Length: 236
Image: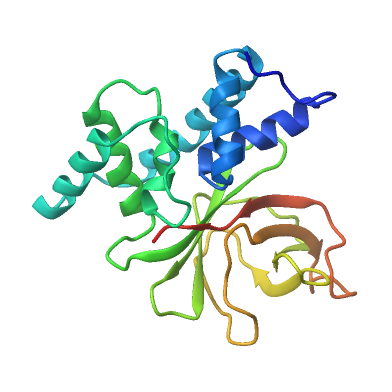
């Protein structure tokens, strides 16, 4: 039996479960979570809840027949599923989303849905799912295409914003002194943001949307409540 960390709070447990499902944990931490799941029903419940939340993303895309090449990739990846952690740099590191689901066909359809959701005709190098901190509901997807210095912020629905407020887009990577504003966001609209004045994206880089005044934060850093938040996952 693997003991849970002393004084782990429900919030810390939920954050750990979210990072496990999204595939952003290190190989060591991922193995530790896998050892704990069989002994800790609360942690297993948190992982199951995150899988259900992200599973809903696949309902947002229209069915589309995959190419024979994609089906072969899906079949190989499903057959290779095992308790060992996938390399952090691999797209297939997102397969924990589907661990425990019944049948290779369902796993294949989930993978296809994720590819379609992120407009996989242009293969993304980074992917971020922004969720509401209150209920962990997915609200936006961020992707960066190969050989691109732009990112796309893609809405998964329409967000209600008061008339005197605005959503401001922020990012922060490890080693930065503070978050950097990427501009104001119009609810329900896809936004392309050039990153030419920032360092290249890196795994686990933080992105968030905060509720600010109509003209954005007056002090160059977030002042309002976080509406959506997530971290970057490298997928190729």
